[in-house]
Length: 322
Image (cartoon, rainbow, N blue to C red; front, side):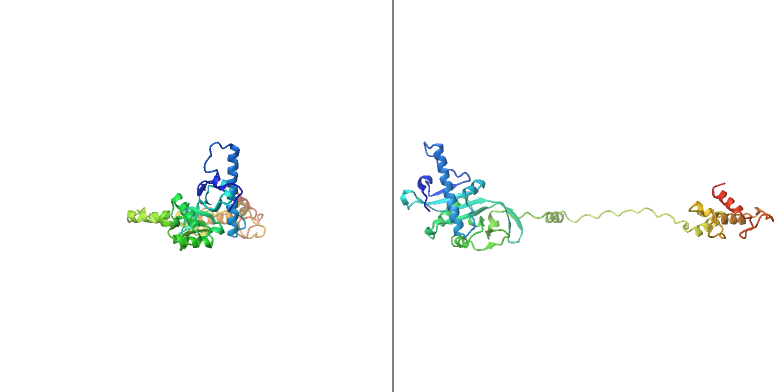
């Protein structure tokens, strides 16, 4: 790729390494600030044009390499220039390789998730006019030596078929580990660069329990002595009255839920109230108490020989404790 400025003067080395600052590789003595700004602008132009050419070769809708992307990410770009061809004495660019470290979640051969941060191949391009001349291998090998990594330790972001064939041909990378993202890793990725996944907490507990041996049995629990069984008190009212009569010889007073039960009900005049029944029972239990005699002026009730109108008052008095 040719440019309208002097590439040889801008990039003195055959392979130049540029970081996110995109600064000229070396300051020239006597260079002014405005001249340095112009040199940086030329480097940005080279990066933008290389990104457009790479996107076109990979049939991408937009470039993935640009000067603005380089400045916002901690990526490194390796630029390879042509030192032999000198069109108009300005030099030319052959291609570039962009790499960077990224945090990824990748699957191993057991389909276990692993959080890693490998060096990733993010973009790789060699101009079509100089392909199959060994320039790609030269650039890739230089990057491996500079970053001190092995080919199988790399993660490749959306590699093209050309890049996969290139890695298989020059580095014997063929078997890939399937992933759920756009990155491709090869067999041996976890064996050298990354430690095996940490065992789960449950597996750690099981291993500790197995090493500690069987757990000693707990001592038998002492139960309190059983209490002696006594007479069971009945719960029904009828059984309770008969039980108290047998125990004390005196019947117990019937339970009264409300005071209205001590007053005769108009709907059932012939039914004596519970207190009256209790009075009759008490009179039968005490033979020395005589019932009041009836007189001709006092009508006699059919319920017990008592005069009418007397038992409600007596019942109310007995119910109120009088």
